[in-house]
Length: 394
Ligand code: NAD
Image 1: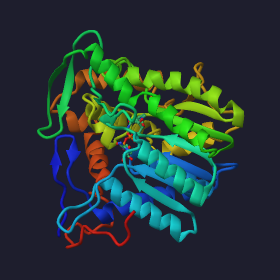
Image 2: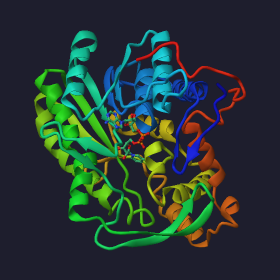
Image 3: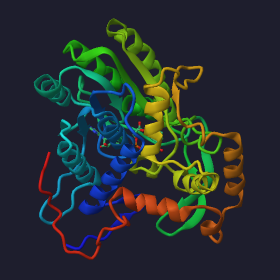
Image 4: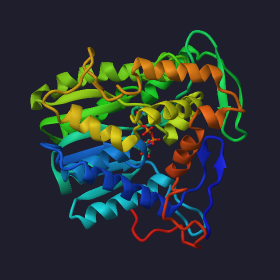
């Protein structure tokens, strides 16, 4: 079939296998160019390994540090007539590249919140990898089934306390209109914490500890976003921000549990980037289009792979990590520079449908969005008739 993007609002319902593979290769190339990590991880578990920050973490561990990796993701395999989800193709491409270099790489496609998946990971580690020295928690999910009760919780992206009205970019029509979002109920806040908070991260570390699969000195990190004034009403100080605060609680609890193996749990604060998860957040497409413009002009623009490279080098595997007062690793420093935020706010106030392409980098944002699904990648022939099936599966 000839595969062209089918975009519906903030998602693309298909993906291009060769484009996805080319994206993965590009990230691997970047990592290799940075040189080997000193004292990096060797046996790594990545939860949410197939796209966005999790995929980049896996690439950095494998190709920057020669690590064996076990990845967990929730992706749709291809059929004769339908493409797989991008994360599926990414994972296949990652595994092929890792194995070609003699690196152990295995992936599990399942619900990371479930007990079954945790058991599968434990069995795989025992059979093939042994104790892990880094566990990256990079899940972004809209719902979670509680493994104890079977109850399903859904997260919401809503403000807290009062309703919030702001500018929003409709990425289908490129119209800028006012969006108004009602505040979350107490139940919605609690449910969002249940899905995106620290409980599942803790369950993972407890399960691995019980199975004696945590190496001496192991580290675990979960990813968060803090942002600044423009995104606070819908992120930092909203339902998802509450869930992220719960990661700080979980990190403290985990640090106590990890003391026995001299381990460390840390929340890592990353910058805003275009991923499937961030595309679903109101405000983000417009915020990111402006942020890209400002940061590209300053030469400080970064995507997932550049962020994770810095996270590993400057924080996780540094003798002198950049931590904030709450003990979180920080690589969102360039985004949060006051002068960057001030310029973003200035453009935010001025942006209209007419000047969108002049005063923001919507073009770059949109290219990144399509790239998430393997479209618009240099060197890929999008008119070629190809099969959505892949040679190897996982
Ligand atoms: P993403 O959508 O690209 O990746 C999510 C990953 O989770 C995928 O690998 C997906 O397969 C996996 N996943 C989802 N549900 C699952 C389930 N039930 N079982 C197993 N795997 C499942 O998202 P992302 O933007 O890379 O987000 C990863 C983390 O980084 C999140 O915690 C997010 O809050 C954080 N973060 C993101 C940004 C950003 O701008 N995108 C900024 C800072 C922090």
